[in-house]
Image (cartoon, rainbow, N blue to C red):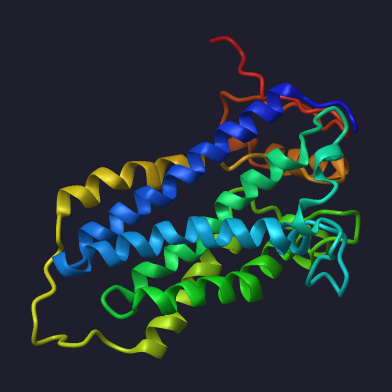
Length: 271
């Protein structure tokens, strides 16, 4: 196993815990906006994604998302089915090795919250049992391949968005938000309007609960948008070049020169 960078590993684990808190926050956020009789169903629709997606992720989800591409940048392979071999493996970025388990846990949190985001679009319109089946199918058919497209860099053998387009998605805008938004719109159109709308009143159950739960949902995510490179360290200079191009907008910040294998931090000159 390559040397482990303990600082990077600690931050990845801390970020994993913080992102996990977003799912209960999302449950309270959605639960406060539905009617009283739908609160429990909405809460459980969010919490059950933690169980369902975690099981799928360990069995085959991580492997399909983060192993060498098997078909035109669309899907990974079976190297890590059941996370076999993950005990003795780490990420390969020089000087910034992180255990596979830590990286897998971090990515699992985004796999969990993505289907949970969809639940808000079908409030009062779905039963709990069919929702569990939908989460399992949608996560397998849609999320795991899209995560492979967006997050896996492997020197030309990764996802087509990551390795072909060289697009960086630090906070999950493509794999999480665009993906969940498109699925939510499609599911809402398929299920149709709520029974009783617009004749019945659909007052929010608890507006203060909505506002209090918005803090973990809206602040933790951007905090955990890590500049984490899985695979080739040669991608980093391109990121630095983009940062230098944006430097005139931040006259107080000096962007350091690009280095192929070292992670450097912006230096802020004294006043």
